Length: 216
Image (tube, rainbow, N blue to C red; front, side):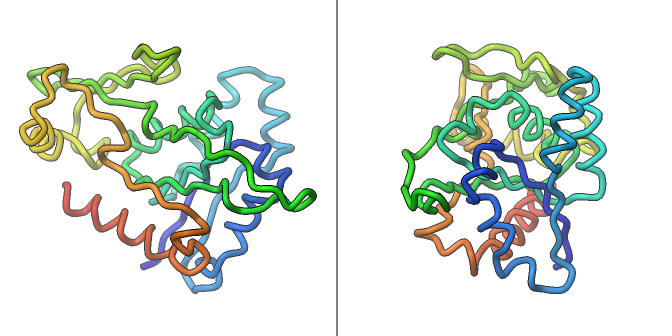
C-alpha cells in the first residue's frame, strides 16, 4: 500500500543517529513507501519566528501524509511540538503509531538509554455526552489539562478517523465515566529492536491504516 509517513521525534534522537536508523529501514526500500521529515535547520529557523511559524511548518508538512509515526526516545514525551504533531495528525485523519527507540544504541557511545515515557499515554481526548466537540488534553505534573496549542475541534467525521462511531463504541466498552480516552488506547506502540522494526515498520503502518479504515 502506497503511503507517506510523517515522523515525529525529539531532535536529540537525530544527534544520536537513532532516527536515521529508522529512516534507513527496509520500509523505504519499497516502491511507494515514503517519508516526510522536517529538517533540523528548518526547525531552527521557524523557532526563531515563534509559535505561528512552527504551527504552519508542521501543518504544511502533514499535508499529503497518511501515517504519523512518533519515534519515542528518553525525552520525546516532554517535547511540546511532538504533542502538537500528534494532535494535529489525529485531526488531519492520519493513522498513528508509536515506536520505542531506546534499545537502538547511540552511534558515538554505543549505549542504550532509558526507555522514555510514551507520549501517546500523555495525550487524551475528552468526549462530551453529545459527541459534538472533542477537547484535547495533556498530562502535566500528574494532572490532565487542556492542550493549549490545539484545544478543541468540532466532531466531524471528515476531520478525523476515530470520531463518533468508534468513540461511542470505545466508551461503551470501557464504561469510562469521565469520557476521557488516551491516545494509547486507540494507537499501538512497538519496540524497534525487539519487534524487528527494520523489517516490520511497513507492516505496522499498513495495520494502522487498516485500523483507521475499520473505524470509519
